[in-house]
Image 1 (cartoon, rainbow, N blue to C red):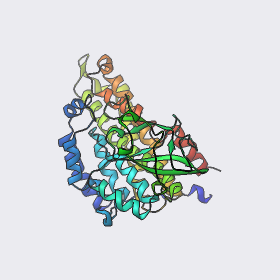
Image 2 (tube, rainbow, N blue to C red; image 1 turned 180 degrees about the vertical axis):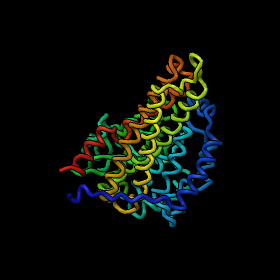
Image 3 (spheres, one colour; image 1 turned 60 degrees about the vertical axis):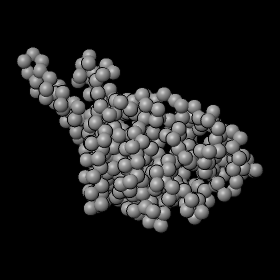
Length: 375
């Protein structure tokens, strides 16, 4: 067996992760019941500013941040229980976007860049990663350019939480090299952001035009290549953690219906045609949960190695497929009512369709895994 096939299969669940999970379960359950979720669907930003402030006060925005910048320095793996709980209760905030952006900055930024922005993110400033020029997450180059005199040209698509972001980390080409550059939200006119309607109404994103934005050499992340690679993998992992939590919630909705709905004098949950797919949902969700915590075990603050890449890609492929199956079966099991907007089951299918394509869908991840694991 070649070394490429011998991935690190370690799996640990630390005391810190256990405490964060317990705290997050209680917090997310209290702050994000289904009525609260639905009340925010038509809101401007898609989340409660008060809930976000509470999360900041609890120190969650600093979980993976170094102590010297005001964080707890528990590592990116410690954020997985929190994000999983957020997914389980459909709690949407800029937490995931900001965590990914802060990781890109930690891994690729200069000391001056980190000293300026990481403490602000710990205190609740929102960061967003602007990567997409088109719909292909597998793109290896960008049409966004940074000229020799440091002027940006180009647009980015579907930038998550862009409307509330204080800082954008933008993928661009500069002097023939791929770079990440820091763009403060104040450098953009309001007309530069175009809000988009998403299939998952709990989420928000904008297209952004960066044409004519003037920067300086200090805006470029010195270690952009590693930061770009790692932030994509971490984005996939955090999306997988959120999807795993949402899969568990979709399963809860299905089980509640199967154990209460009576048809032909019997609970519909007693029929094997519904029992078996429900067990498949549970197995898929448990498999995803194992993979996200395995990935949480092997990712760290250093440049992600091959084991970490394999773990992040496996977690993303499994978790989003698990949620897609659970969301689809949830609607089908509810019959005609499942296709209505009032049925909560549709919230999970909408989320599954959105999450499938965040940081690469399952097919994209397995294409890369084939190269990593097979001769």
